[in-house]
Image 1 (cartoon, one colour):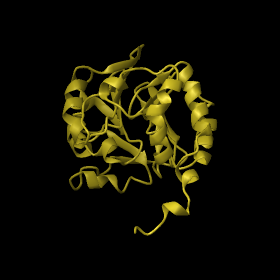
Image 2 (cartoon, rainbow, N blue to C red):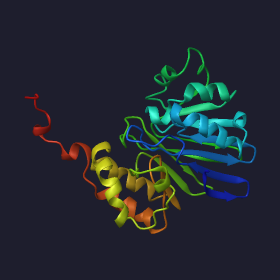
Image 3 (cartoon, one colour):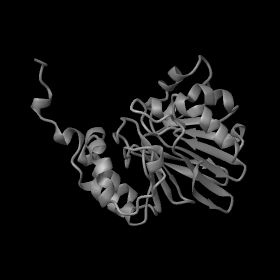
Image 4 (cartoon, one colour):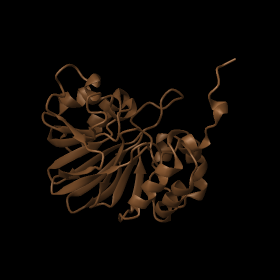
Length: 256
């Protein structure tokens, strides 16, 4: 069953947390459905392991054929590997992804399936209508992908943050809202130190998102954050040394 993140005035945000078989070989991932009136959009629809369950679960809330957009934060397989099947299931939905990746994602599909359906998001981001509302594609480059976007919903005030804010755990743990960050940091820290490129980029990101009215930060892996945890996470990320900050010449040696 999905988690209802928001539902008011015909605008609904749903999070699916446990569609992939859990085990040591599968990373837990979240998928998101935004519904506004009679139109909808998916954010980070996932790989082939998630497709069947997501499609069936979605039909209980929304007709997949009425999707107008598929948003991909970046081009990793756990984000967009199911694209070929979504191209078949949706007759006209556009795929929104960084211009860095727009010529790569056709490799996930049979020849010709994505023709005329890819919209490359420019580096500064853009606003995309979804029904009566819009989603704002926010630049989040190198957090962790070279071309990377987060998606802000101004109606629900949810920031869908991709891999930033991710925590490692199970689908059941991902359904638990984090309201205080301190106890949650051990589930995030190792991932962020390895996958985020540098503190410089984290500081630029923190400065940007402080200009937004955010009620929730909802990552693509692990638990959503709300309440005091939103501000605490932004402050934590702003201070974190990660990626190339931690590398030295010892990390670049020919193996013995």
